[in-house]
Image (cartoon, rainbow, N blue to C red):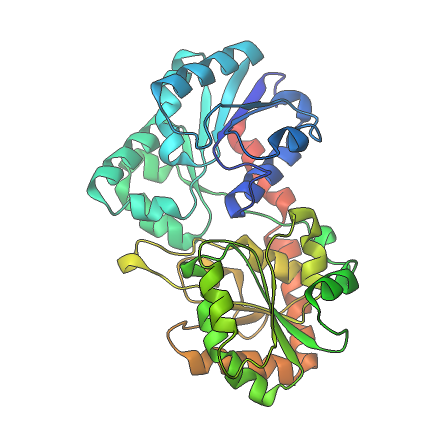
Length: 377
């Protein structure tokens, strides 16, 4: 890379927690800090977070960064002030609409990262037209899974679709492979050391399928008496899930940890024996699970993964080798897969080891950063 700087323009950035946030942060961590500037939204406790970084982070006054004329002028000013000739949009839709303004500011290379929400953008008439504009405004749009590629590309011009490149979130296995923090997390959740734990960690939104887990859980613990379901995360479904956990048959075997910092997540995975998130497609196919970085983190931790058949999520699992893909509409199938792993610790351990190896070779964060640097150059 040249001495000129890269400007990352993103609404999704820590300390806010989420898949896109961790993806963008990991890409930033892989770029030379003296060649990087981030422009992002304001968030609670953002100054504490930014003080830990060795590259400048400029916070817009807005809590949600949108491609308004004011934001366009602010981003142009940052690009000129810091001498940035390359830009990465943390989420191409909608911030990629700022591409023409940044060209005026002297930016020569623009990369737009796409995730899951561009799938529905590609299938709604008005947003489809805007997504096409984004694709024509940047040099490259990336995609996280082959599923997303198939759904997004038809909305783009022929040249923009042909220029798409796969850039998937990566994970550093060494960040998750240890067992440190296991006992601390179990104590915090009130789980004895000898109990087997099924973990579901993500934002508590309807698409993730926590309610499906809770509905089959009585069936699971009738046979796996020492099992505990640990749900980690917060979100709009929190009250409903707590209510479901109190229904007859769960017998007090469901635990919740509402807020866990990302740096503590390796200990959360270490506290578990199986990872399960039966995500599902909603809103007539417009709301899907694009990938699910938690599936990769769980695999990197050596856990077998049970994933719902939604969008690109099944691409994180090799069926029957690193885990299972289940139809979230079939509760018996979900219960059977969980029981097969809880009944056979040896099978679960073998799947976890295979998943860990696959993440190291096919889903590494170093590979993702290498792809981005190639695109920027």
